[in-house]
Image (cartoon, one colour):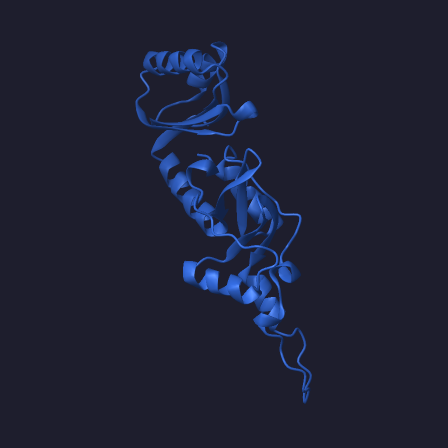
Length: 215
């Protein structure tokens, strides 16, 4: 499964010159914790609820100090946002995305498609789907392929599945491969996948990933 299949497509964003109070209100209304910061069509940063908390809660409180804690209204989004944002493309697998957010300790991944913001996935979304995938893998097999020639590869897929008597449970596709080729996720009834992968590759199909009772 790829993040293009699970990402939130209607992304709420904010401009860098907007007030942080406005960003906070959007987060509260939408019940989410991350806002992509857009300057026109360009992604220039990310703002999280953690950024807001760190801005208004002093790191050190001196006994007897008369210094007041800053207010949200004291800041613009550009003052608190994180720049150098790590992004993903729709074709990134959920497994790779989970590894990325855990390694970098980030809470969300903006998804860029053709240079534009196409969606966003949160850490919670990814981990939830990842758990579902692990549960699904126990009762089914999966094969991910990238279409190099859609017509020929489709013929090879269904011929090979039929030859191995593999029952297709579900099929989905998303752009995101090299040159925006289709990446397809096929879920099969529980079966060995190594012989299927071997035959697909002999027929010129590019197999990206496979899980089965023999892997």
